[in-house]
Image (cartoon, rainbow, N blue to C red):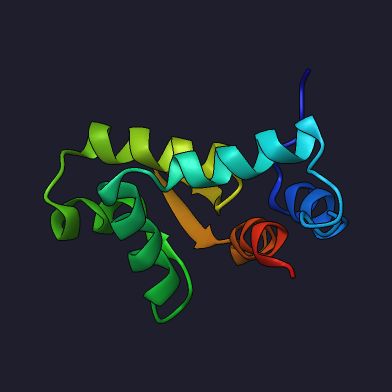
Length: 117
């Protein structure tokens, strides 16, 4: 089953989620929520997401992400791909460098889907 990982589509799918106490999540909703939390299951990805979310212009160049986390550029690129695939950040290619922006909607929607009472 192919699902869209665009931040807006993910947020929309999870926002319509019903109260878990009243009705269980659908398989698709559970998969989308798991994708978000799985992407954040690594401390390096949590730190990368935090760095981007805290950036003054609300975006960061890939070239500025290696030093703060102490990882090589290929490793940072791998982690960023997983965050993009989960819908947690968006990627914009500008010439040679990729720029990342946080997309908090999917994270907020995933948390809300599991904490509604």
